[in-house]
Amino acid sequence: MSRPLLVVGHAADHTGPPIYLRNLLRWLREHGPAAGVAVDVDVALLAGGDLLDDLRALAPVTVFEPLTEELPDDVRQQILSGEIDGPAWWAARRHAALREMMAPFAGAQVLYVNGAPGIELARALPPGERVHLCHSHELEIGLVHRLGPADRTLFTTGATRVYSVADAVTRYLVEQHAVDPDVIEHHAEMVDVVAIHEATSGLQHAEHRRAARRSKGLDPDCFVVGACGTVEFRKGTDLFLQMAWHVHRADTSRPVTFVWVGGDEAGIACASARAADLGLQGTVQFVGPQTDPATWFALMDVFVMPSREDPFPLVCIEAAASGIPIVAFDTGGIAELLRQGCGEVMAYPDVAGLAHQVIELLRNEQRRTTMGARGRELTLAQHDVSVVAPGVWSSIRRWL
Image (cartoon, rainbow, N blue to C red; front, side, top):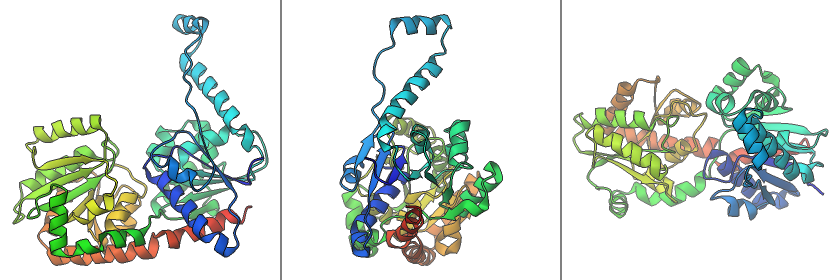
């Protein structure tokens, strides 16, 4: 028998929506019983990932098993001859397998779709009267380029309520997808800010910071300008390198090391080659995924978010919570945080302007310190799990 609340999502990888879900489920586990709340929830995901064990410790999780069988010979021949549309055939097989996976959840009363890709699982549910709560962690790339028309409609105008993580996302949903403003609720992105404060507080002291930099292979006497994310077009790794080229040529009183946290082997190899083409070999370090990203952020002097589009990146919240000023393009919701005094915002794609803001911050230690302190204050007040999770759960619970 299915539980009354079903959560669906794209994966259990180390990206924004799965981290958000883990934070919400942890908060419910810790605070639900104390408040007399019985948390009865199922989770269904399109793929697994590094966070799967964490999620399974908090709720029952079902993961879709990708189709692995080979094409029947007759089907292969029909595809090769053009009698059958190959992609359409595979899409139908995938949907049938998803429907089989989702059949046990037919009795769910409330469906919480944590991120747009999870709507594919919602479409595979058996028909029934249920509430659809769709949490949009996406803008155009996530909603238009990664969803088909039917899924996009179901996620936006087909939802009972749409949860938005930023004013920028709300405007986009209303203006581009005709979502009724009355069905949109603001529920911000969240991280465990308190834990970040505890993990990074010692790094506010100069000697501890220098020692920690040495342990990470960073020169303690250099400025460190960093970024974090997958190495891809949307995240603007190429724009980060262009910014680094400008800053590297400027007079900053000390050498500058540029660090990119995250990315896979292939992406890093490509970006490293591009850095070498720009004459930045030895100046830019790609350190790959890290288990302690907030510690890396706390060792930086400036954090840069060069994304071409990013609704409200968790890494920026983590960097601000670590006490580091941020410079970003105005390509998503993070500008709403930075304009409160913890960073600088530049119009996209003004890379030279982005670099100028970084240079000015490197030249002004007091300004970096003031912005860093403001970031720690803002993130604790607006984005800590203890602040955001109660509101999300209150909204979901009233439909149960």
